[in-house]
Length: 299
Image 1 (cartoon, rainbow, N blue to C red):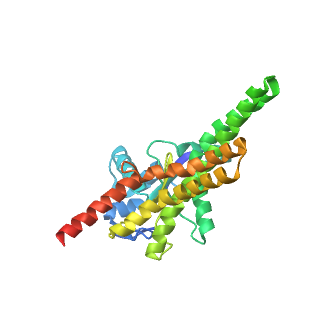
Image 2: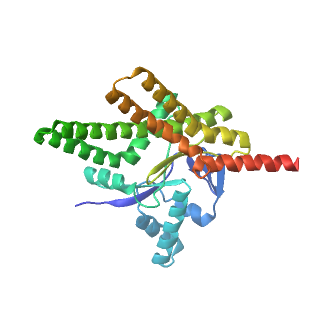
Image 3: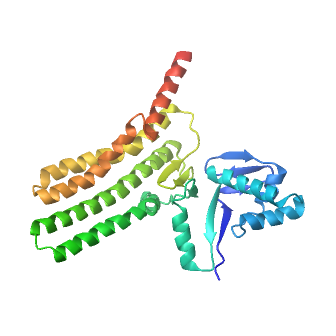
């Protein structure tokens, strides 16, 4: 018989103290009251919300439904701020893996993930794994396209149709790989530019949402640092993509190889879209420029 339950647990680098929650990676304290502290002491990565409520009600002795709602709201609020993660546990291994995979695409999903900061490649690999995990569901469509192209290759007598199907399938696969690597490079550029500015590789973490991954860091008062960190994400993969395009245009004369290289490079060049003022990075750059102008007027 399956024993599936949804379990909360405090994120790594988050510490519970008597009257506050300490976030070591953001260097921030969140004040809490005695009641919240007692509830969070029951969060051990094994108990479900129902079990936590039952334990808490032994002391509070109030209406169970009211307490359950309050406990659930508290845990959800902590999750929204990346202080607490959710996971599903089950005595059936495959069920646990499948449910946790599906749950990451649920609306409102938030997860805090630690970056392996032992080296650049370790950090890049940890972020790359997150990106693959988040958009891995789209790989199913790539696989379907590949299988269909193989079927066409086997059954069709029209060589041009076969070539078109195979080239399309290969192009989608190359675009998918380019999207993963360029997105990972985008995020690692944010991470390392901030670490270099602050000279501290323990600051910040990766915040995961249903279809996104982003670097969460402490509020920075210096607008120049914010601008550098914001622009590094889209600019580094974007410039690399332009270089790849120029190299392929110069060295690869055969149309098939040239087009495949251009598809790969295009995924990196597309990261430059994030410099535009209506995107996340672009909005932040505009905001920091306005702050600098405002400060200069005051001075």
